[in-house]
Length: 113
Length: 111
Image 1 (cartoon, each protein chain N blue to C red):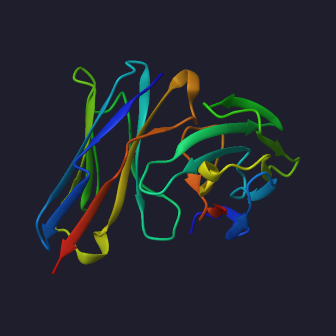
Image 2 (cartoon, rainbow over the protein chains, first blue to last red):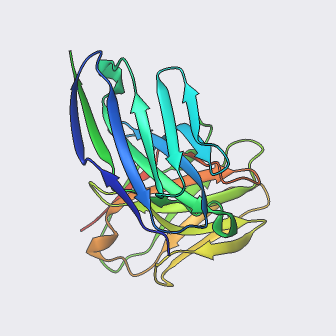
C-alpha cells in the first residue's frame, strides 16, 4: 500500500520568511496530493491540492510542486504570518482508491513575530 | 466553513463499551469517509461509504463498523472499546471526487 513520509516534523520560521514542507510517496499509481492545515482542536482544512498531470500550483502565498519521477511533492508558504502557525499534513491517493487518503505524520509550523 | 458536522464533540467511555459517532456530510456530497487520528499523528483511513455501501476499508478490525443513510449522513460504530481507541475521529465528505472536506471531529476518550 501507499506510504507517505513528511519532513520536517517541526518548523520554526520568522514572520515574513518562507516555509517549505516536503513529502515523499511510495505508490507510483498515486495521482492526487492534497495539503491540509489543522489548527488546535479543529479538523483538517484543505488548503491546496495538486494532481499528477500538473507540476506546480499556486494560490496566493501558497504553492505546491510535484515531481512524479522522484515521487515527492512540496508545500511552499511565502511571507509567513502568525496565523500560518498550525500542523500541516500532506496526503496522497490513487485513482483506484480515490477518497482513501494516506497521510503523512504532519509538520508543526510555528511562525514567530 | 466546510459544512461537515459531527456529533458529539467529546465523548468519554470505558473499556468494553460501545460507541456511535455521527456525521452529516456537506450539502450535495454523497460520499463519506471516516478517519482515526491519534494524538500527534496523521489521520488513518478507517472506511468509506458511497450509496449506503462500504466502499473500501483500511486496516481496522471488524468491531469498527459504519452506516450511511439515504440523506448521505453516516455513523461510525465501535464495539468492545479498547484504550487504544482513544483518538479524534474525523469524518470527511466528497462528491464523486477524491477532494475531501473534513468535519471538526469527535474526541473519544476510553478509560
